[in-house]
Length: 440
Image (tube, rainbow, N blue to C red):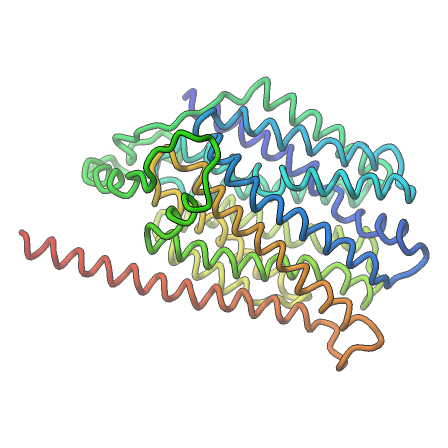
């Protein structure tokens, strides 16, 4: 029961963190436009500033996140989780004071630095904490619940922003971010890697019988054998990361799928809000409405649909279903398919978690987060000029949503690769079954 209480406190901290982080998203586009290009609905400078911020943040997170994850394997999740939670307060506090041009550029610089420590580290550490507390058989469902709690923070923050003036939005966000740091230190217990002897009888998400637990446990122990030899330094080398990601078909496939899906996802984020601003004159309220619909669909999917499906379907199948839904990057219909695309990240993370040892959860999740961050570097470099070009009056042809279509193609590539991964896993399982039959 103590483990359940720890997970409950972790979920509360995750909700508060994402509530504060996502609350400001509907307002930040208007704040940026007012500071850089006041009185205009189209501004290439604002688009390039956002793209540059995403690129630098992703580059820093690419380096920092695996290091933070590896350090958490040695020194505990809670100690390292304190860093992104505390740093996230600073940029929100600046805009809570004022949103003039000077304050905006101060926020911009601090946000870039804070994003390096917050962009992937918090998510990586949350996943590693859950992996410490939950056995491999239940991990996909609990990862889905964690994503659902994060989505609930997104929905609640966006809904709050819908009814608050811009000035109050940043003040409330800064206050909640500070409260998150206090709650984390006061209530969330530290975690340590556990050895799950009887996963089928875990109290968390209990719903299956305990029969056959011994065989499941033994196979799980094989899957969770360490992939890397222990090393003395606290900072993993690039060779260590490459060795980990290439140590199995699951890890290498997950890395490739993560890259292309994240490239499409970040590309869509880069293009969509400015496309809607230019094409339809969207403001904070319209952005909040759109994000609210998509976030609510993702939250309901991860809190209700995925935990149920995870009992009957393997993560590979859930990943394929999610990527199929993620290919539909159409601004007017994408919110409908968020119900499916919400499966993608928990499925990838669960596959990765099951493929490494208990003391490698942090570095493994950090490497996947680093790959996602690398995609977030490339996405603005590719999609920012593409979006600016096709939204300008000098576009090669009249197709304002061209960059959004390209983002959909990236997700389509990830979908094709996931199909090949599933075929490879199926073939390997069949060969293993034949060998076992011949030995019998």
